[in-house]
Amino acid sequence: MHDLSADERKLAINEIEVLAMMDHPNIVAYHDNFERDGLLFIEMEYVDGGTLAQYLASQAKRIDERSILVIFHQIVSAVRHMHEHNVGDFGISKKMATHQGAAHTVLGTPYYISPEMCEGQRYDAKSDVWALGCILYEMACLQKTFEGSNLPALVNKIMKGQFAPIRGNYSPGFRQLVRDLLQRDPDFRPSAAEALYDRLPVLLNQFRYQRLEEGEEDEVTEVRLNIEHPSKTRSPKPPRSVLYYMKASESSIGLLPIPLPPRARIKEVSISSTHMIALTTEHLVFTWGEGKKGQLGHGMTEAWRAKPELVMALKTKSITASACFASDNGIVMTCGDGTYGCLGPTATGNNTSTPKLVESLLTVDVSAIALRGEVYSWGQGQGGQLGLGHEEDCSLPQEVTIPEEHVVENVRCGGDGTIFITQQGSLLACGNNERNKLGLNPRRGLISSIAEVGKVLVPTPVNMMDKTVTMVQCGSSTFTVVGTIDNVLYLWGTRRVQYQPREVLALYASQAQISKGGDAQPGSLHAQSQNVFLVVDTTCPLPRVNMPPSQGSQREREEMLNQEIEKLRAELENQKRTQAQMMSERVKQEERQG
Image (spheres, rainbow, N blue to C red):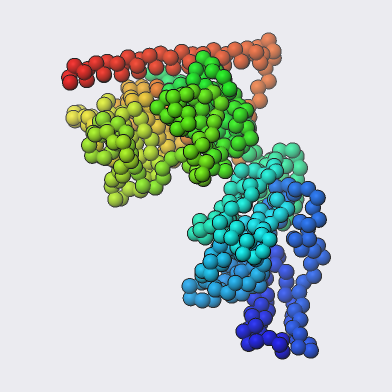
């Protein structure tokens, strides 16, 4: 201490003060300090298991994801505790006591310093979050996130924020957490509290479900992470999804399950006029329907595929979106009909039956194949479907003016109309409202008659009788179907000739299932021409059917299912022919009027 400057002595005293403040099971405890012969001694709790660095250095092979998460949860819990006491900065702890809650001094191990520290900018608790990302990456890869032969080379790599992809059997959610913690812009990094309470429980639960299904007790997770088990009399079941085809008649509605893997959790469904795609949370892609242009991605052209089948060419690509195929490392792939350049510039005019890279996007990290936030539209403006206040066609995106009291969260486009879902759960619509398919007509009284709204050129509120809408789909050019927060589906238009919103389906788990902790929630809605598909997320157990072979063999059940699927195919073909005839008649009518 005698040889230290005044500032250096202040830093040493600060270290002691900080250690004395910390009282957390995952922070090495401070006991006392004393000075002897000009040397400062700090008495700390003895850590008999060694340091994390020593543990990682002793590993001959990669650590499994669950073990990493258990350790990382403890680290994040400790950092969250530090931040609550305005303490931060790995390497040497200090109080962030300035009035902006930020610090200037750069101290600590250079491998974990953040880009803002490298640039000499003010930094805050988000710099510790960057260091957490470096540690999580290092536990998975057993090497530093950023390395350089000298300090300038190391700083240069940190400033660019580029690191090698994580190899090994780690889940997409794990990889995404690393990327989020290592965002160059600190505003986009989650806080330690968000990582602890929002992100890590989701990742840990997937292993908890697996172990419970196998009949194992998860004692380590229960003790160390303070995650309580439910009643020992029953084991919780992980959620799964069922994709239903809704069969509607004038008197009833039936739900026909699509034969996807029974324990799959559906993340996204995309449905075109010819084929269907289902993407699971395991990033597996299943396709079925018409494959004449190779759009199913199975490496061949085919007239029709009745049942969903895994696209093997995408099995290792970690797909995150299914309209085009977007992987978790920002790569976009397409397959199918290349007419009009819809598969990308390199495939213009050519069809492909196997997903191919969109090479012009290789230099761009694609995170989503959609626009979010402000609303823009372009294309054919007939009927006011673009919501721009006119019916002119637009080749460039134009911003849509949304009423000030509404914030749009999602958009769905139909054949000649558009519907917007707001954050408040209300609906706006614009375009052709023939037969009230957009729900823009005022509600009728018992006796009074009112003029119907033909078309609307700007987003206009839809009367949903104070229902909170969570999902919506425009079916072909004739009807609309919505789902509300209370698990009820409403439909209007020509699908069942309903001119006002009418409840068509209420979805609930049975009382017996609820008593066992089961639940059922609509996941998403999808429309294909006149057909409606519904994804249901449920924790209810798979049905167990014990039937004698003579009363219902597996082959007989498959034959019944194939018959239903063939009926669906025939309906699709009839609807396509009808739609083509309607389009032809419309073109002829326009030519006569012109």
